[in-house]
Amino acid sequence: MGLFFRKTKALERDIDQFLDQIVQGALAFVEGINSYLDNNETTFERHLKRLNKMEGQADKMRRRIETDLYVHTLIPDSRGDVLGLMESSDKVLNILSETLAQFSVESPDILPELQDNYKQLARLSCQSVEQMVLAIRAYFRDLPAVRDAVAKVLFYEKEADQTAEEIKRIVFKTDLPLSHKFHHRYFALHIESISDEAENVCDRLSIASIKRDL
Image 1 (cartoon, rainbow, N blue to C red):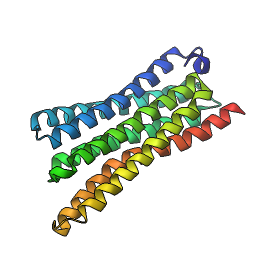
Image 2: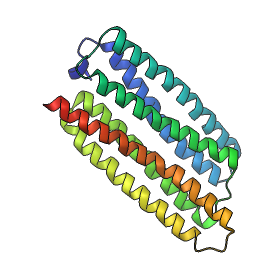
Image 3: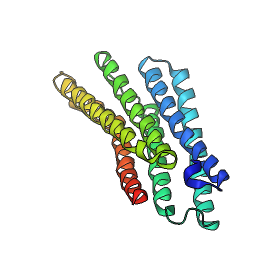
Image 4: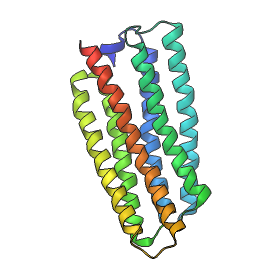
């Protein structure tokens, strides 16, 4: 990030640590989903607790970054874009936490034959978040690399969409009660929304990158 911040080493460190929380949160989410589907309640609750803690830490980091940007008038030309990226990427972490929490609250009974599909959907969503973070880091360190990272986010988002659609097609062909079918669809949509939000962040990032390159 040195090329972008130069003399603002503390801000650079804070943003790096904030992005670390998002990556680690995505990984904890995947492990949490896997644990839930494998009926490992203890491990699931551990990952849920860890993810909730990361979300709280990231919120504090984001607010500190926002305060530093305004109080110390750092990077004034790009401040609005950086603030927008921090807020929108924090929302991704919030969705990760909220989605895993819903598994804990509602305890969906996922069909055994669909468990691998849900695991794949969670993994693809995680990969989209990981690439989103790489794209944001590239915005600060290596602007030309943003495009490649964004392209990967879009790839994983499309794969997640297809996997979620496959889940819905399969479940609605079963003889399950309609309420159970809706429950399957609801949780597929929740997991899918993670990659959708990562794509939204990258839409914002692409615009910010163009502005910096002018």
